[in-house]
Length: 394
Image (cartoon, rainbow, N blue to C red; front, top):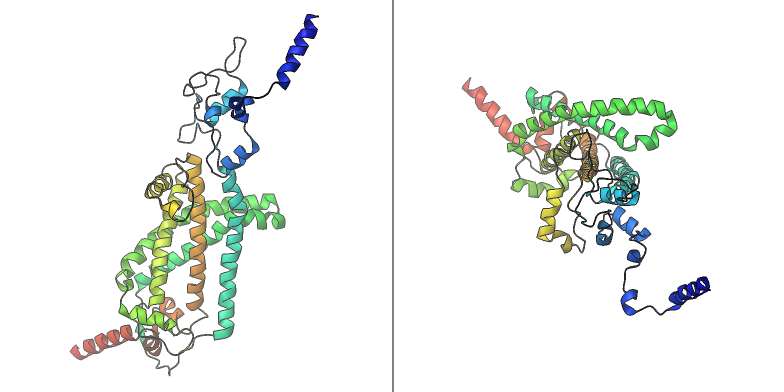
């Protein structure tokens, strides 16, 4: 009889109307704080999730107190409590490994980075580099090689001295090696493994990483050299506006007057310096993990300025876990490198098959006098006047 009455009482509680206060209780709270699929997806995308209730479920009345014991015969922390404490960095983690990321066992926002790297970043690589090469090929078919219009004189003018050419070729050769090895690291798994297999790719990837890390120092040194040697000649002036207005004569109509470097070359110079400097900074951050945190402070500053709100976007994520700093550094390093590679494609094209006489400037150091008069008339006049004055003195 008692059992029957207890059963009736239990069934009655099931059909009692829910009060307004009970209806307002979070469904996650009623289930012990279990997370929903929406919570997981938002957290992986780097969005904010209301986890205040779950933060307190770490097996300790004080949410800030660390978890130090597993569940035992006398009670304590259960496995879910322990892992929840690790997620919210309130667990008492001990390890022999030393470093900023040693005790970060669970990272919330790693999935979006992996998906972006394996998806959008690979598409950007194909579209940007492939599109640039296609555009240059079409330009060559339409415009053809840019020839020297006037009659060649056979006389030459020294355009670049030996040290200038050394800095240029050190930068060019190191960048090409870095671009190739970087692409192997970025897209090698998708392209090389299906063709050559895992073992062959492992060997190539390991060698590429070693070469990439060490050749990077030559790139940084060369970047400093060309900046010191050419920065004075690449400051903008009024002649650049005229050059840009006429498109540099690349589509015909003659080449506008220019000094030692025209506006197009100046744009490439500053692109190399700025983008190359940014690549070097992010590369150093990757070479020395967790030592140079570039993004957390930057995101915090931009948020304080309200910059994301100007574009209708949410605040940038802050604070960042150590692994997140490296993920942002890797993405920044890759994207900026791809942009600079596309620019260098155009530079290589114009300096080789795209323009007659251009390669001699870096290949030999001397250029045909007529070429100099057509492409850099202001600079050519200054050099010839100086040469004539020196000849008259002697």
